Image 1 (tube, rainbow, N blue to C red):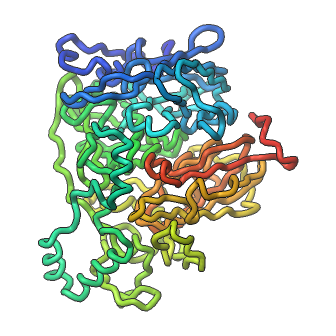
Image 2 (image 1 turned 180 degrees about the vertical axis):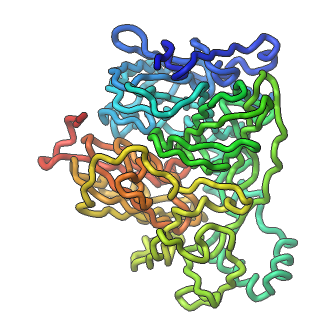
Image 3 (image 1 turned 180 degrees about the horizontal axis):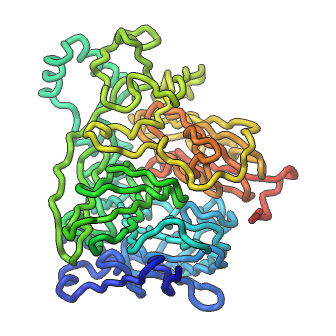
Length: 599
């Protein structure tokens, strides 16, 4: 089947232009694809014999639901323009910095020479004010990805955009219409103030703490003794059961393609079409979104840019930096709300899938905020309400509706007891027991009767090439001290480690991550795939980011094919800034990190 020149869809070239009336009142800084489909002015494709794409980074005003702030935009828009590449191309992306500070662009999930990865201090020096940096690399993959700053807190100010790579051969995914859906969080506060507020006071943005009334309700249901034990347990952790996200809707407006909830971004369709929605979580804070489209089933066809065997679902959680492509097939000519609710239920982003511009549908009410339980603390419960270390705890404190909380599924592994290393002051606590939570959709999900995506559901469309067993294992613990707002691996912040994590070129290794904190962490490894060990053998899905739940033990197989220095970090911007960052160095047997393997 043929494609149009810009590769907008595979079967039919469908372009919609907003009428002047529809555009009235909308911010001029929004990219055209975010207003009404695609438009050649805002879909950047490589031009000329050198396949050049030009990008300019600069300050700009940004309007969100009628309120104005200052942003960092790319080519004058927030989010930045959609970049559309083709697998098999050699591309040249010229990035000009018009800021008064250094900047960068990281091509998230893209396999390339490490010098082109865009991480200042790791792979290059950054782009100084007034300079133009040329990113050159061969495009060796296809799928949905994104790009963003790796300099300071610029990402929080709007420095991000979508990246789509069309396959060199026939696309196995059939669709008529195609939209990126970029989810993000926006604050009118200075991001440095947001960080400082979290450092000064644990739970600064948590306006959903447990109340006195809730305490008495718990006493009525669970009894005074059990309720006090529950509250004291969280007190020892220096956390509240409602500490779900560091930064919340107290300061954030949640956006969909640059639109706040009141602005109602539209994606158009005709009845009976297959619409491909490419969800990208470009949030900078701690925002994981729970996405659903009431009245429509979604079929997941791609995760982190990699094709997966289709999974019909009604809802999915998308962590920061993850991407999910879904196909929807509206059978009626009516509007449908695309609803992305923050994990802590403090707000939402929304848009409308509609047959005509300007339509809207009912917006669901926010669900009640969930709360952490004993399992999130890393406590293994027996049926008598005792943890396995002999402390009396109340089984009713646990959320029985969570998948796998009270029993392990046939595929799940038995909990693993934590070793003797408590990781020092960098870790306020440890998960005494670590759980296989691949069957669990996450806190606050799975209680509504909807089919919710889990990591266990993801199965690669094609088998992975490297079928070797792991030759060695690297285990890292995700650690933190919420009271001091310190985040780290193995209790050590980045400035405290002596050197990089060493991988050997083309070895086969297992990376095991253990979350000793009570928060979700989206962990991103640059420069190579992580084949998530979710029980699907050679069809284990390839991920560039793993959302690790509290007290979870999760592993992935890795073959480091490209030598170099690669960033490895939590993709919560403030966690990375406060120490949850490492460098992985891939060298050959001679210790060289230069020279790429593009086979």
